[in-house]
Image 1 (cartoon, rainbow, N blue to C red):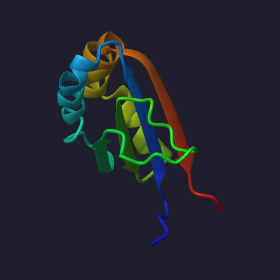
Image 2: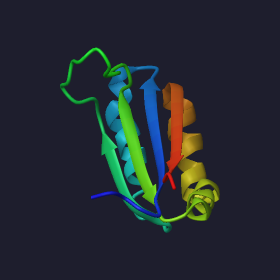
Image 3: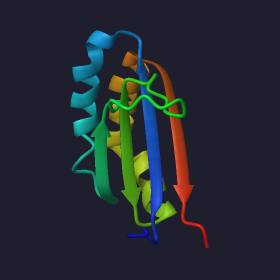
Image 4: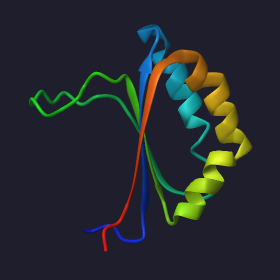
Length: 104
């Protein structure tokens, strides 16, 4: 099924210390109840080893929003800001975000 009217927010996290994976996942789970999120997926690299697959990250977050405005509201939600300040900025050496919208 082709997703329509969807803003995709995909984040990959690289940890300073691999031992902090459970703590980062705990922090990501605090985002689950936030308003404006249509769907959320918290994951780790799959056991796929094709040359085009980047498995270098430790944890990923995929969120689907109905609109760009919903994603903007999420960015300034106090609980998201707390997650960024208390988990991502503290535990991660690198964070890469890819945002995309539907093609016309």
